[in-house]
Length: 115
Image (cartoon, rainbow, N blue to C red; front, side):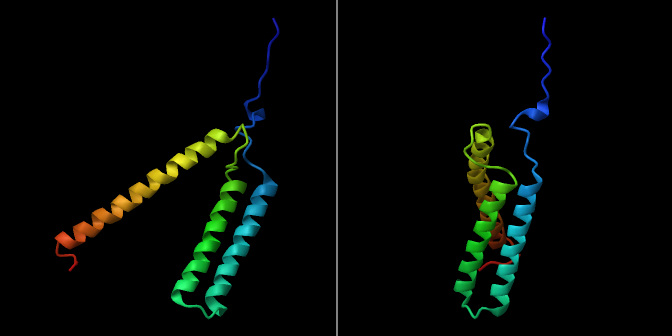
């Protein structure tokens, strides 16, 4: 009988932590945050223009951090993590939207405000 010793930390599914990836995510996130602050302080934009630029910067920051920190990609060993995230996003959107709708109708039907 041969005994097989399997180290669970050798599997690709659990090898998420990586110092260079965390450092890159931190530097890129900090740079994008500084860029957003500089846009707000020094750019002479309309409200819509500033909102659009900050939304784009925020979206880029989220995508970069999802890839670098959570390793959400289409690699075979990480595909189920990506699929679970993709399935969570619509549920989160529905939950937030229904909560906003609930509080909006509650405010209209009570003395808290509304028109």
